[in-house]
Length: 218
Image (cartoon, rainbow, N blue to C red; front, side, top):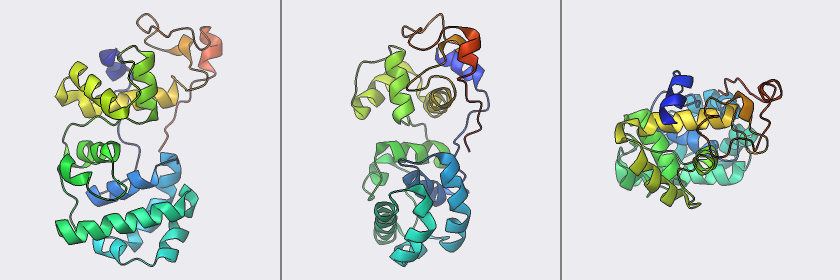
């Protein structure tokens, strides 16, 4: 199934726009409860205003909130970003660390966010267990676990480490485009003969094709 998804989405990539690890870290924090497309409309102004961790750490809360307001939950996100940047400056010299155990000590940074940054900014393989990832691996029968950490552990044992980051992209792309939460486009899915959940969405190819969202989502 992983090989078929890789063949289906050869151009899969992180759909958040970024130029360095700090930008990706901030964008990923903003992406909580928000689409990557919406985040990408906000970050050009944000990144220009706050190019370094020191800038976020010293940011005026109200100004930062106003810039990120379109991403939702902007007060909590502003507090999280400022707190994260302050710890970066205090403990890591303002540089985003390249180790999972360091990243998860930062405010607003859990394993999912850390693995996004590691896999896409540092080239260190990581599994991004977001809502799409969780939904698909359960539908595929890869695991029945519901806890993200346990899901990550199970999938890590199924997929070669070198493929973790790209497998995450393939699952997320498939979840956004075909295997939707409410009405998956089963009849338009490349995994029809392998998926144990085939048929929970429309199996008719014409009806299913109408449900496919081609993207891009960036």
